[in-house]
Image (cartoon, rainbow, N blue to C red; front, side, top):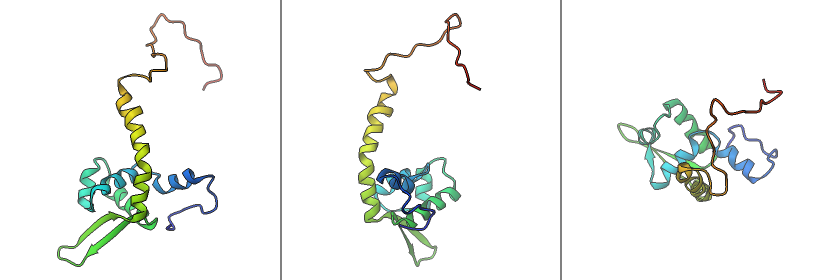
Length: 137
């Protein structure tokens, strides 16, 4: 592992340690994008709408420092740099696959309504009597 602010010895469990590596809005999306094939910086940026160059560069540096992503700079004109997953990154992607399946099943596909075992939510109307929450500020 790299030296990007990790807390060696301070982890509560393995999930805590893994979340320290993949924490941040863009890291899992970078891993997903690199799952198919190596990509250049511009390809990654276009594939991740909303990410800024600064944030993408920082996230890639952290993933590289943690041994998840490999950066290959080719001695060409114009310069070419490609990012790919290391074996550790591939293993991390494989570990995230069940989480992705859960998200598709329970969030993405579940957007059409609540889970079958929960009561359907009802819209609050103006004439409904709603208990006040005391102590809220």
